[in-house]
Length: 572
Image (cartoon, rainbow, N blue to C red; front, side, top):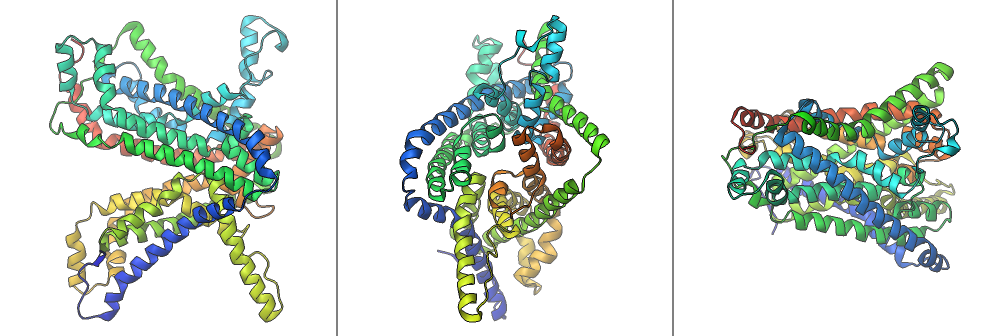
């Protein structure tokens, strides 16, 4: 049963404040769940003559391509993420300190920009194949041609190279927390280095690997731009084409329901994998794994293995974008259109960031202020939007917004004889709403982590001195939460800048952002015209990556340095 904590007995106004916070959280959660409910209602209406077409021609291909893409990307990301994490954690080799943070750089490149750059780089007349023909002494592209990157294998490769840091980050943290004692025990029982890794270290890191792989799969499932550019007909692409090309909202909703089942399955797999994670953290004061020195060809192989995803997942695409952007600016200068799109992108992302952080602060503060199971449950329910692909979210948002617009328009016509038209649908409000629902989990998670570092005694002291619950937030929590709020705001801002799927479907008419501009140029095949916009998105995307790299290194760096000073235990 929900209980309200220690209100001041002398003020009825203060008694009402916790009720205000709880009511506000209930409203926020209802707004987050509204698209899912609307989606279910739309899908239940049926799609008429579209459904047989969807069943026969669309869904089989979409489900097959989605399953192939998720399995392939998950496997590749696991190999790259786990392999690089084990190398930089348990070994010393040339460039290891650089690779430790540089392996996160591919996160700065959205998948659709990676696809956009790779298609041009890997074109038969592009720089990669031209250079290979020059080295081999082959003049004609007809005599030497690499497999087309616009294929399933190309999509798996590109997604894996961009998304593997999710696995790397989670697994590296788990390897750093593992005790060297368990490795030593396996070695004393006769296990070799490879056996100790595969039979001891890897199983202990399995929950972290499952979390990373499930995140990779959800990102790949949510993608629209890269899959469309590479010609892979995933469920997301099918939703977009069914809605936009076939004008069938009901058909799009039914495909979206199928996609939601896939997302729920991925979330359940992730939860199932984490159910025993608590057993992996019991070695509280144990000795950490001491890095083993690699030499000769082994060291060279380790450096090349770490260098491969950095070069192909970030460095080469980024250099390509820089070159194309310089040529484009030199030839045409910065167009007014690009400046307008930049303003659209920044202003939308800024408004969405403020709204999302305030909503996250409200949810998490309610959970701190009001006792009982309801407030924490509202925080969890309010965070489900991050697991909903942008395309699905856009389909679900359209109906409640359109219903509101139609009701207002009908009322205004009846009472005043004027038409208000569409107030919310296809407006900036719809985009901010979609961004807030999509990224509320980031905001709530960041603020919740910040609240855990603030002692509840500060709240009690402030309330005893006569401060209201709103005043406690403003005068006590906000200054202390500034780092957490700043980090959450930065992550939301960058994700909103990069968002493509929902933006494509909900943007106002003739309204372009940097992301939609890049997608439009890639769809037309005029890649060079979108290079400046793509480079701007990548440069902004580097900010959270730097923050993430710093945050991930600080708590564990001291322990890792201490482990390096000890004699190696795993190389004897």
